[in-house]
Length: 149
Image (cartoon, rainbow, N blue to C red; front, top):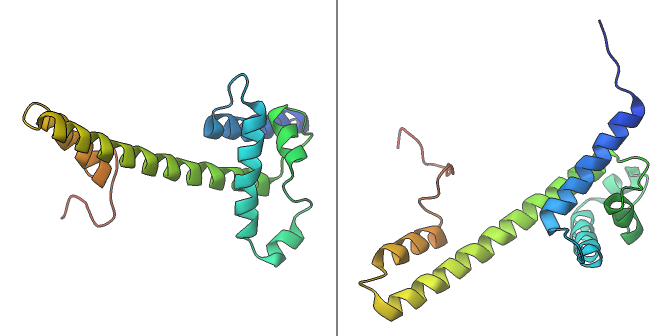
């Protein structure tokens, strides 16, 4: 038996997915709507600038502040596949940026603790230093590292 999805429910789930990506990526909390719209449109425009003219010409529309607002306010009637792809690219880029910032902060904190009392804080300095260098992260598999190495 073949069951078809109702078009409205599919559109709503795409809108929910798109909005969810924006909410998670840019921390959409009360009072941050305008900030999130601004951050999102800047990030989406960076994704667009990286695309070829041919790809952009195939798209029915480019990213605008109004389009981002319609997604956040759940007013968009449809979400195209390329829009979800762009949002996911933004999410990945933002996650990488946040990881870089976290590692830099960990390195600064490790250096600070080492100058205060290196013997007392040695375990914490080592943990922060390892995180800052990108080693000993649980659940992360690095290229070239594996069971056979």
